[in-house]
Length: 430
Image 1 (cartoon, rainbow, N blue to C red):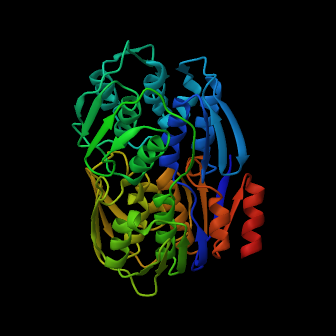
Image 2: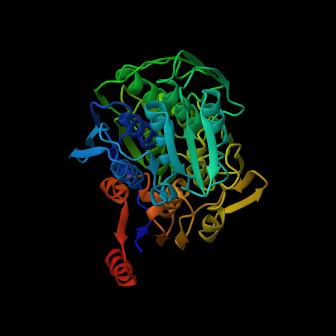
Image 3: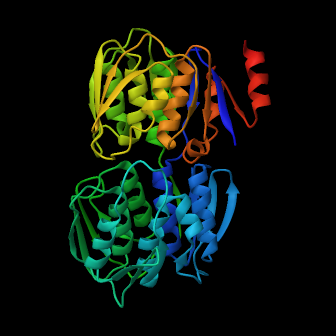
C-alpha cells in the first residue's frame, strides 16, 4: 500500500496549474457514447476515477483511444453490451451516468448499484424517478438497476432534492427523448453546466443549465464534437486552502474565479488576502486566521467537497468555529484522524465545533475518503514534524500528481510504499 510521508512546516510558495474537473469529466465521458460519431475530449484529468470509467466504457464496446495524458478519442458506434459490470461500479459511483447515456441512446441500460466514497447515503431514487417520468420501466434486481423503454417521452420533472447526479443523468436521457422535458429544482453546479454545454456541442437542445429550471427539447441523434473540460474548482480550492494553512503565497492557475466565489469569500473572511485574475487566483496568508461559521450548501453555496479542508484551516484559527454539514451525513469521519494531530474538534450530529489550536503535530493518519484525505495532507503540511497518510488511493481518485504539485510549491512530501522508504525520507529531512 502506498502512503504520503510529509515533513510539515514549510510555507507553500509559487504557482500551480489546475487540471480538468473530475466531476464534469465523468458526466461528459458517459455522454460521449451517445453518438455513433467520434468525439474528442481535452483537459481530461488523469485520475483513478476517470480511468475506471474509461475501462467500463471499453468493457461495453466503446472504442477509446488516448491522444495524450489529458486527451481522449471516443467512439460509441460499436457498443454491444448495455450492461455495465459490477467491478467498475463498485469502484466509482459516477459510472451510474452510463444509465442515462445508454437509456437515451438505446432505450435500454443495466448498471450495478453504485459504490464510491463512503461519505453518506446518496440515494439513486431521484435518478430512477426521472427515468420513470420519461417513460422507462425501472427495476432493481440482484443488485442491478435496469431501465428499458419503448420510447422516451419528455415530461415535467420536479426533483425533491437538489442532486447533481440526478440532474445530469435525467438531462442525458431527456436529450434524446421525444418532445420537451423540464427539470425543476435542478442542480446549478458548474459541472452540470459543462455537461449541458458538451451535449449541446453534439447537437442537443438544452437551455437553462446553471439555473434551477433546465428545459430540454429532445433530438433524434447526436453528432461528433471536440470539447475541452472546465477546470476543477475543488482541486483549485484544495490548493488555495493549503496555501492558507501553511502561511504561504500561491497562485492557482487555469481556474474560473467565478466558480470559486464561496471558497474565496471564506478565505477572505478568516483573514487571507485573495487576488483574482482572469484565469487565476492568488492566496496570501500572512496574518493569524480568525474563526467563522460555515454551512455546506448546493452551488453557489459552500461546497461539501471543500468542507474537510475548511475544517483543517479553522482548527488552526483563533477562537471557536462551527462547520455544519447539510449534504452528507458521514462527512466527519476524518475528525478522529485530525484529533491525533492535536486538533480540538467535537462533532454533534451534523455540526463540528472547532476550537483553534496554535499548531498541529505530525502523526500517522489514514484517509477515510477522497476530500478528507486531501485535508489530512494539508494538515500534515501545516504540522510540526512528520506525518504519514495511509490509504492514499482515495486521494488519487480525484487529484492528479498531487504530491508532485505540492512539492513544486516547496512542500516536503513523498509517495512511498514501505516502512523502509518512510525511514529513508525521515532521515533525509531531519
